[in-house]
Each structure stands twice: as C-alpha cells, then as structure tokens.
Amino acid sequence: MMRYSYLYEKKRKLDLSRVRVALAGIGNCASALVQGKEYYKEEKEENIGLLAYDIGGITPPDIDFVAAFDVNDNKVGKDLSEAIAQEPNNTPSIVSNVPQQGVKVTRGPVLDGIGSYMVDVIKSSNPEGEDVAQVLKDSGAEILVNYIPVGSTQATKYYAEQAMKAGVAFVNAIPVFIASNPEWEARFKEKGLPVAGDDVMSQIGATVVHKSLIKLFVDRGVKVDETYQLNVGGDADFLNMLEESRLKDKRESKTSAVKAMAPYDVPTKIGPSDYIPFLKNDKICYVMIKGRYFGNTPVQIDLKLHVVDATNSGGVMIDAIRATKIALDRKISGALTSISAYCFKHPPIQMPYEVAKAEMMAFIEGKNDR
Ligand SMILES: NC(=O)c1ccc[n+]([C@@H]2O[C@H](COP(=O)([O-])OP(=O)(O)OC[C@H]3O[C@@H](n4cnc5c(N)ncnc54)[C@H](O)[C@@H]3O)[C@@H](O)[C@H]2O)c1
Image (cartoon, rainbow, N blue to C red; front, side, top):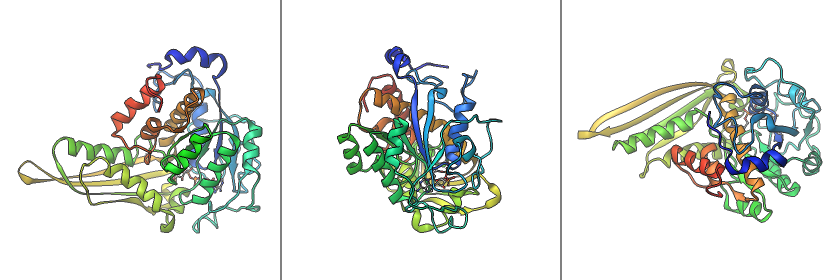
C-alpha cells in the first residue's frame, strides 16, 4: 500500500500524530466510524476502504474520540462504545468488540433534530441539552464531525456555531449547506478554522456510481436524455427521510452532484424513495439513464446497487478527518475544496471523481493548499 506521508511525516509523528475528534449524532454512521477505528487498528495486507493506511503520517488508530453528542435517552450518558449499539442503530458489526472509548455521550440540544417520523422512536427527556462549546473546549477536540439527521438545519447551524466558538474545525457529513455556503465558509475563514463538506459521498454509493456513469456517457459522446435514482433503506435515516419537507437540501445535494457531470441540462429525479424496515441498514439504489448515441440510436442503463449504508461512508470519513487534521496543522482555513470534492456530494466546487481524487492527493502531499 502506498504511503502519502512525504515532508510532513516527521513533524506530525513528533508532536501532531493524534487527531482529537468530537461527534454530533451517534447513529449508524458514527457506529461505523468508531468500529472502523478498531477494525483498522493494525495495518492490514489490503486496507480496503481507505485512501491509504497512512495519510500525512496519520493512521486510523491515531484518531481519538474525545467528545460525543446525541439527544436520545438511550445513548446519552453511555460510553461511546456502548452508545453506538443502542436502538434504533442497526448497522451490522464489523468488529466483535469495541473497547471503551473513555468518552460519555453528552446531551446536545434537540432543536429540529427529531423529525415527525422519529418522535416515537427517539425519546429525549431534556431537549435543552448542555453547553456544547464548553464541552468541546474541555475535551480538547480539534474537529467536530456532524452526523445528525437529514433536515436538521437549525441543529447543524448550532453545531457549526459551537465549533467556531470552541476553535474547532467542522466536517459536515449531512446535507445542510455549511462548507458550500460562502457566508459560512467566510466565517470559518475569519476564525482561522477549516471546514469540509457537505453531505458525505459514500465509497461506492449511489452518487459516485451515478455521477461516474453520466460522465462516461458524456465523455463517450452519448447524449443523456433523462435519468433517475431511487433509493430505499430500513434504518433511522430512511425513516426520517419519509418527511418530504426535510429533504430539500438532500435532493439538491444528490441531484447537483449528478447534474454537474453533463454540460447541458438533463431531466433528473433523485432522492430517498421509501423506508422498508426489514432492510435495516442495507440500502438499495436503482439508477436509470436513457440516452442516444451514433445514428440517434437509443441506449438505456438500469442498475441496481445493494450496499450496507453506514460502513459505505466510514472509510471516506476516516480520510476526510485525517485530511482536515493536515489542514489544521498547516493553518489552512475556510472551505477545503479538494477534500470536499472527493469526500462529499455537495462541495464548494464540484469535480469529476478522478479530478477530485488527484486534487485531494495533491493537498495531502502539500502540493496545493485547498
Ligand atoms: N452512507 C451514509 O450512511 C450516509 C451518506 C451520506 C449522508 N449521510 C448522512 O449522515 C447523517 C447520519 O446518518 P446516520 O445513518 O448515522 O443517521 P442516524 O439517524 O442513524 O443517526 C443520527 C443521530 O443523530 C441524533 N440526533 C438527532 N438530533 C440531534 C441533535 N440535535 N444533536 C445531536 N444528535 C442528534 C439521533 O439521535 C441519532 O443518534 C444523516 O444525515 C445521513 O443522511 C449518511
């Protein structure tokens, strides 16, 4: 496996080798991330799912979870290792045992975090929560990862504010626009803090497959006439996404990632489509692309992708966290455009997948500062 440590490795290994991370939202994605740290505690022959085992001198076990926030009574007050196993979390285990992390889940404010489909599922006895900025400061966190539910606009803005107040970088895994919003990016820049996002793009998820296929059609001279992407799943994320009014940014995030691959407008319909409880954390995606090639001949692709949702984003987030730590070390602030383009669906600058990957590698190697 290639190593991408280069010039920065020595310095980082001396004094900056650990990454102190806080998590907001201890759902399935947080579970996959925490389990991932344990799964990759030693370098494997094949480090499947990671850009590299060592990024800028930082390996997955160098990540320390120092603070965690949730609103669910089932999770608040428990060690992070226990909280990730509480209902309604239902992602499969990738390790047999997650050791105690030494960090208890703090109660955050609910704000708009619990949608109408979740009120019967998530019991939250004290919706006010604690002083998140103070908890972040006391924990020594360097990066706050936002993993709260789709449609949590106020709550995401709240966590972004708390990150700035505490002097902590923000990595936004959800489709509320922070890194890709020029006003928020300017505020992070003013504070001297990096921000990456928005809406994590899974390793081999619907978005990266769909956008890569549209680009293939376009590159091969096929005119794309119309396309759709339907998604179903059985986890809390899909239950929450039954509430159409919470989906505006989710639809825009997924749709803009795909539309950006064609130099002309393509009639497109993309979004979460239904909740099927027995699928648990499995997600099934159907993509249809219709077009025309030589001689105006019609062509159509119908694709079905079946994945486990949470683990699909775990490696991407381990990479995004490590790259954000590199930005902190180099005192780079504002939106991290290369990391965001590679790891997220709705970055400040949308790029084809291979360009985004090259840009992110250049960033890690110190060849560009965005
Ligand atoms: N591959 C993926 O799974 C993937 C890909 C892209 C984006 N995302 C997004 O990442 C986010 C997390 O996904 P998930 O599957 O873990 O969701 P989840 O519903 O399992 O977890 C969300 C957690 O946030 C908690 N929460 C709700 N309001 C809160 C608040 N105000 N403060 C703190 N915690 C709060 C909930 O109790 C729950 O534990 C979702 O927005 C999802 O759409 C996931």
